[in-house]
Amino acid sequence: MLNETPQRSTMRLTRRGRGSLIAGGALVAAAAAVVVPLLLPHHGGGDKRPQALTVPEGWRAGQVYEALDKALGVPAGTSKKAVPKAGLKLPGDAGGNPEGYLFPATYPLNDKSTPASLLSYMVNTANRKLNGSQVTAGADRDAVNPYQTLTIASIVEAEAATKEDMGKVARVIYNRLDRGMPLQMDSTINYGLNRSTLDTTTKDTRAENPYNTYVRMGLPPTPIANPGAEAMKAAISPPQGDWVYFVTVKPGDTRFTADFNEQQKNVAEFNKLRTSGKPSSA
Image 1 (tube, one colour):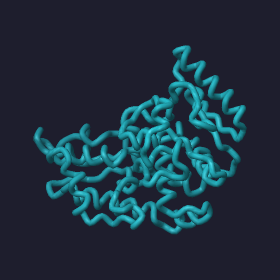
Image 2 (cartoon, one colour):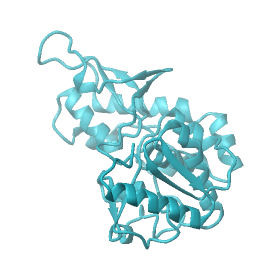
Image 3 (cartoon, one colour):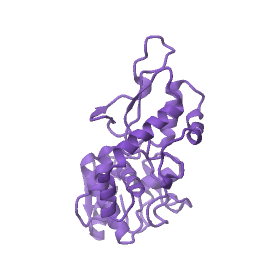
Image 4 (spheres, one colour):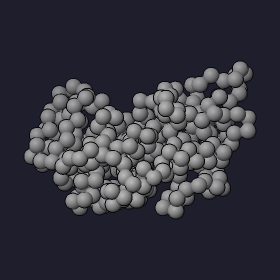
């Protein structure tokens, strides 16, 4: 949901903030994976590693590190500590931070798998998927570089209620950037506060951190998650439109508009449904 200013009711709802920001499946080449790694069958012995690790669309780096540690049976924090020494092929803009480059897919595990080898595998996969000429061309058209395109895709992944909405959410982001409007995305606030929640308070919108897109202009400094192919496609080639606001009023009903008064009416309907106790978000 987007408002013109941080002034609003006491709570707001992000469209995909719940739990661990898991989308409805992860990419495995051209197919969708629907199981998380620690639920995969083991090789036979109860104490052996799972056969694969699935990274769902929208997971943050911290979630990937935790899953890696558990899947490989190493102490908590091992994978995160491995990042500086893993020789990850990240762009200079990333500053050594692999957020956004741990590509959602299913990765095979074997007895030789290590946190460093798996992280490299993920980043190399992201580079193959994301660094092609199509990404650059799309970024050039909208006056953002490929790293910024990836950041936009990560916000789209977190904010869009459905894959069908992704392109419009991306267009809202570009339109707001073009018009010098703050993005006002709850998903970026949640990332900066290291949490995942449905509710964002007015106090949250005043938090002092670089991911608070209510008080800071432009994009956050890094991606806020690891987006999948659909979110990247939306960020590269969003549909044309003048939308600068959107709100998911109820499941399957996300409304996009360029008119502030219309947005306020949509928000009022959303709040009415919310206070009535009826479900208001997919």
